[in-house]
Image (cartoon, rainbow, N blue to C red; front, side):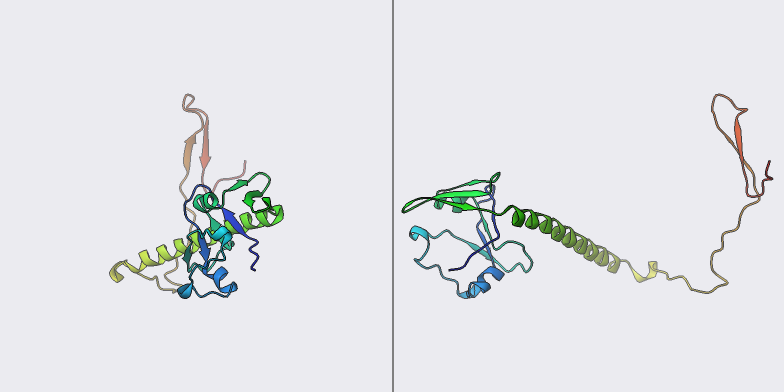
Length: 175
């Protein structure tokens, strides 16, 4: 018996996904996975397996698995209820585990998005012709040096009163 503590219930999806890492921890190989008759009530929900390396969940159950098991999830109270031979079964979730999975999932997706953006930028840079790429020389004589201008500028402060102005310059006397 294998206990899966991180199961995502996605009623909006018809997919049931079991991750390769979960299968390996259960002692199965992805290529030789064959469903057995030991499944609940002999009903075997169809699972798609995926070789995704990083995931926080062991399994994602969609609406088809919930319908096959006649299970009713309550996301507010983190309870899944379903019929069994001796009555109803209530499976309670853990609030701390749920919150940590949510926050870790957000952090993981942001990190993956940043790495995908970095890959896109690197690919677009590779497409720039070498003729258009110039690398500036690091000579001290050719370094840009900012020098203050000696020019004075008068800026109007109000459009309707031309007498109210400000004078901007690098060499103003303190008054």
